[in-house]
Length: 467
Image (cartoon, rainbow, N blue to C red):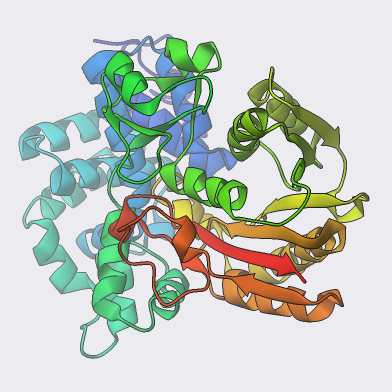
């Protein structure tokens, strides 16, 4: 029995966990509730709030893993869970008390997506509702028993629009994504709805943890042996971890490696590997925070006698870049990349974007982002790429990168920026800079990676050369 919730009744007025009064809410479910509630109530990010909750409740091992699965799984599946809870309760979810609503989401996730026995999932969730929204206890019990009356596929068949009638709406409910994101994926995949479904399914899987073995400091094969992982499938620097806390690894603490998705490694390495004529010792990372790509570029630059200028507009992110590049030939500048002067041989524009390529890692983002976020982001992307084309020397290369497959952020931003730059620009085929035999790279010249094709985040790469 863990320390429970106290305050007004078993829980506080706003459902915040209140310590003091004992309850029968077990610690892993309590941790998951705290994290999910913070995401919805405070606009928190799960990857930031959950580790703090786990530390606070002293959860480790299997308990921490269970709390993590409940938190991330519930947030990823929220759209579908809400449709099911609405059908099971006979009311729209926005009419359900927020504290009870989050508890019901957690309970429904356990019933439909885990091996927790139905009676245990119902009982534990009812205990949770008693603690956070006691007036809804009977309601929650009835709703959960109705949810338990059929499996996930049967519920989807009931609550999702028919595929033949509205395939986008069906996929949105069946795979828990907003319809506008389903359309964006379908557009980027050439209208192939079967492949779109595979992309959506992969978005709902737990993502692997990837390390980057910094060239000159670590070998990926040796690092994999050291950490009990496996060498990556594509990047020569990638190591796949089986789990755990990568930030606690000795190789990460001593700067031989850092946590970085394999797709991010590939696009940064492509810029460094692309052939150019003439001088090649002045590199620029125009949007460097939090520093993963700057760290890899810095390690590669150290082997080639080059120097990286890493620019970051946000002060705390600039400090993160400094930490990530300590001991490497990298100078960090806390400024707006759009105002940069100078001349550079290689420039990376890792542009701020919707982040649709990393939804499996940031599950709350799919519900927070809106199409209305696009105009200011695309304006910034084009201004940054325009600045990069201004400061790169003739013959030099610019890599435009986004963690989003949205065509407006990828193809349209590149085309418009090149057209408006006033400089002669050629698109370089990026496919030969990917590992030999890498599948699903399309017709070029740009590259779009995908979780379901490559096991990476959905990174986009365009290489532009000033002529």
